[in-house]
Length: 390
Ligand code: APR
Ligand code: PHB
Image (cartoon, rainbow, N blue to C red; front, side, top):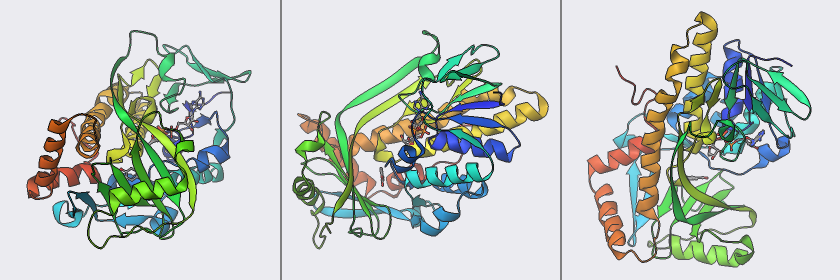
């Protein structure tokens, strides 16, 4: 089998790349180790930056997102017995976020690729990358896929990044001493907007997927087992961390999904080795507090598409050569923002000094227009050319 771009992984990065390349007349094959059902049902974050919404819209895959996604023009920071809204409409006029589940983006992209005759192979075992310096190819379940370029879009635990020879990559990382327990519940959201709650019991987040479905997260110890969290304990803890302002009552309903996810900051540089280009979680991870993971993946594949389009149209490798450096500008900004939101809002053991700093910074962000604008412009997403040299 031969294609122009061999794509490993059918998450948001791999699927969107395949679609954007198709729009530029570039052929690709997507290889995914899990089943279609698995990738479509996997519950992940659900906040799309303005730029992400625009990319999906312009690529003609935004119809359901426009119909069912929930545009939000602010978030609440809740701490010290008060709620403080960060009003995007005033601080970053014309920019907002859209709440739309990542697995819905994945469903839309799969449907569109298949409708356009694209090739996505699911349940593909034993994917291996070969000859990355020249004439690369991918093998899987006894087959061989030759390609000009390989896009490693297989997430943090994929095979692409480990296929790069030792000594090439520099890894930067930070682990956090907590995890997030996430639930989906069949109950209307208890407030119209997201609530990021700082409390002495740990961080909590109120989010949603639709007018009927709420999404919540609790900061929990890293080794947490779901077995230790019967429904009543989850609701009691959410109440204790969120019902901290007068007049707010948490609406409860049947829990339909639950998960525990690790919190990690990670960047591997550069995002390229020979003919292999890494995109999305394969190259970088952020803790979810800033809601940046999916958005970074979209920004990466947007740049990779432009670079490959230029290469196929003119033979120039200028944009391909610039790919890693250009992505990393944005990646590091999101790394900082995600680390900052995480350290601002979570409880760290035995750190009374850090606790005071958090409260002081929360007071600043909720009272200074300048500080609030910094949060708002990062949250809704910086322009795609952020960090580009003139
Ligand atoms: N072979 C083929 N596919 C693989 C392999 C492999 N060896 N290893 C992993 N995959 C697949 C995974 O099953 C998954 O479907 O690669 C895909 C990677 O998708 P994601 O983990 O979703 O990563 P990405 O597409 O970069 O999406 C960006 O945004 O909200 C964040 O972290 C969240 O996943 C999200 C990310
Ligand atoms: C979500 O709705 O899943 C969500 C929202 C905001 C975040 C992280 C996750 O910061």
